[in-house]
Length: 403
Image (cartoon, rainbow, N blue to C red; front, side, top):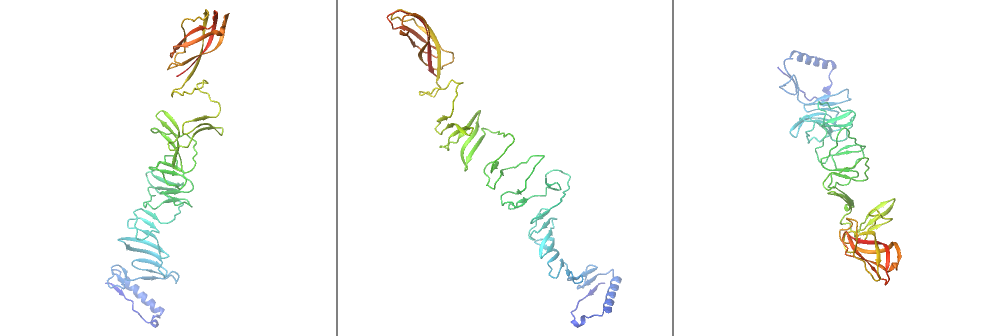
């Protein structure tokens, strides 16, 4: 058997009930409940399904200090109903929601996810979602696998729980961070130890400039205390100004190339030391050298106006005996050059006399004639232009210029 307690409207003058009468009615109700414990009691319902079934709300009043209501959908506190716990169906799922100030603050979804300040029309698949700032003193995540951990400080470890699904969301650590691109922004320093930091695409360091098509983009100065190694096919260090190629350093096969780019038609290649320009090569290939120049171990360089090969200046001495009658001529003589000096027959000249021996006749009437030059030597004859005999030993400088 069930009991039905109905509430009827009565006038205000009938609401004054003697305290003893009220206590008597409460006692009778308790007696009826005690002796019908095997039955259900319903308030506002004729067929109660539970031991106590209430059709409507229950008013809770703690001495007029914290008035609240309890009904089938919510437990509310305060006469305005702006704070409480609500369990209701929303968008096809049943959630448990906690309200303060008429605003949803905490929601537990049917999939087990806990959402803080998340709109009620969104259900996230993640286990914990916070919309707004969060402060954590200690967060421990216990797991048997010690991998893939994000450690914020010595007391906070997150494993496989920290991610951003929405492309417009960014994880920020620290304050006063700009609205720059990227999923993670850190202000205050980031230290990675005991392992590698690997980025699958591109990295920019410094500034908020846009990425360029390089794996590493640095905006600002760089300071390195170690070596820089480049391993590539014909690697190049490209120097730009306002994103325009100006100069480069490149390994081309086994050769090192350094200079200005082809589009830099007005730039010079300059070598400096001690704060001054020492060697300047302009865009036409003209070279200007400030200071002494030592070439070929001090043997210098001759300009070749007739070809592109380097000219060589070569000298040696040749000594002959001039025992000739008046207007006489010697037999054919020869002069040999140092092997490997020339690859093309040189131009050969008789120079000054550097040594003599003898006293017969006029020395300076004796001439040395050179002819028949090859890469290894030339032929010579002595001619006495005087009508009188001569007898001298004469040493001449022989001068050769060639490739």
